[in-house]
Image 1: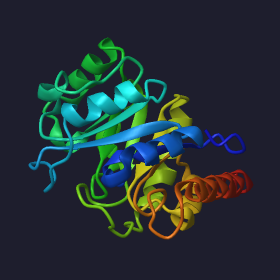
Image 2: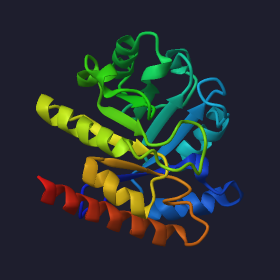
Image 3: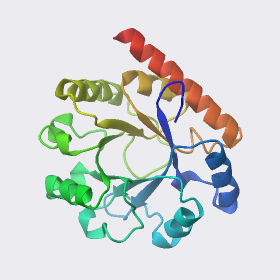
Length: 235
């Protein structure tokens, strides 16, 4: 956690340099990354395929102290709940757009000891969460359309985050706002100012080609702190 701001940073493992994965994960673990973010894509909900248990399990065993943050971009995610090495206390976010019975799936996840989350794509209205948000520990706002690295942020999501933050405060619930997609030192300031609590750091924020991982993390933490200052001044 960024001790100055309280904003958490989670590393998008999909974006790691797989030719030096141990070196990279050792470094960000040493630098205090808050969690590992696992994007699980089935090729149906989004046009890509990502890692399965054969990749995730050995990494989890090598870094048992790092919490898991699972993002299931799959159709009917409940059918795959037992397919991945998800542990008690992990965040598991499933897409509102991909579930026939979202409430049932959230209840199932909580019974498993997971922290249930709901993810929504840029074009999905917040109103779809009205009657289930109190059952979610996390709402994951996609700031780009799911499935591809390197997209530009959809500008309307900043208003969406502000509206969600207001909804959460009015309900007086502890639901966290996570944001995923084109989160970099520039966009992070505005995302946190709008209300984001957790930043998913991928190819533009953490696993960058222009600077090292330690420096990238420092820049993201500075941006998170600046965003929180702006948020507090706006109140």
